[in-house]
Image 1 (cartoon, rainbow, N blue to C red):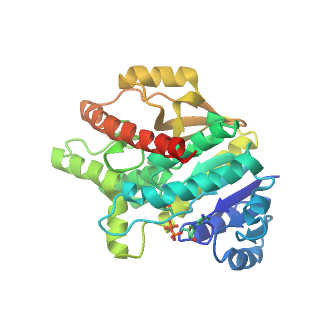
Image 2: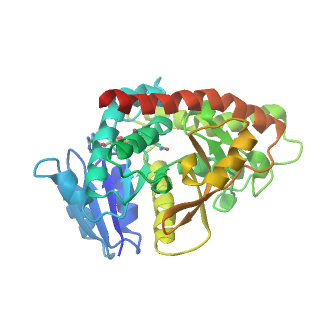
Length: 333
Ligand code: NAI
């Protein structure tokens, strides 16, 4: 029995994500919460012939509490998306408050749930959830994840495009490490399961890195004020949630990229610190999942000189983002 919950379920990401979770045969209960429209979304999804029983709640009458009761996996895409010209950090003021309130609900109603944060800026919202959980004495770093899967999905697609065969994209695996915004997104293309064409010009390599880092901007621009990535994000979020659910159900050896606290695995984080030459409180890298969440943070391994430079550029920004999240909660209490 697995109860999955989506907070922000009526939104651009929330609706298709809820659809994909309803289509996941391992999900037996699906709880949907938003400040608008969840009863309609839930009624609609409930007619789909898959096992999950769907319920949708709104804020009055303890809707958040009812949605979260018994939750195993909670995915959070609640908040506002970017408009053209905005960075993910511009969203901070609004989304930080929303995420803090939802984290408070999880801490009091479903403190053992696995929490998957999509709301941007992920580099800061994950520390916000952690700090709220600490206030309530329920923090387990192994159970908190920032969803960076879209960066990995984009990297697979863009590399397959360069290789001239989109049918490869489902098999191309590129580790993407660091964080989830702009320069903090570091694709380790030298470790791609499908090597880039030999002799790829430096300009083409740089353009590929830039496209993976700023791929979200392409969508924001194309939607022209209508928001940011929703469908590709829902796909990526559902992929990641499915891996967490399979791991929780006992499947071994599942590895997924995610932005996690280095406290989730002491030996993995020690190796990571050695590689980075600095200690960071949160970092995204491949993570092995198990029934209790993070089993292992997988170190970066061999990186190229160009990737080393990207990592170096990511660190100061990432540190700043983490501090912003931590301070927000400290000032709120
Ligand atoms: P949207 O505006 O379409 O949907 C957001 C939903 O959140 C709305 O239905 C809204 O009513 C709901 N909401 C607002 N306050 C809430 C609260 N207190 N409790 C529950 N629900 C609440 O936005 P969209 O496009 O779905 O994006 C959502 C978030 O996901 C944004 O922060 C966006 O930046 C982020 N995002 C993250 C990505 C990632 O890779 N991690 C990729 C793309 C977007």
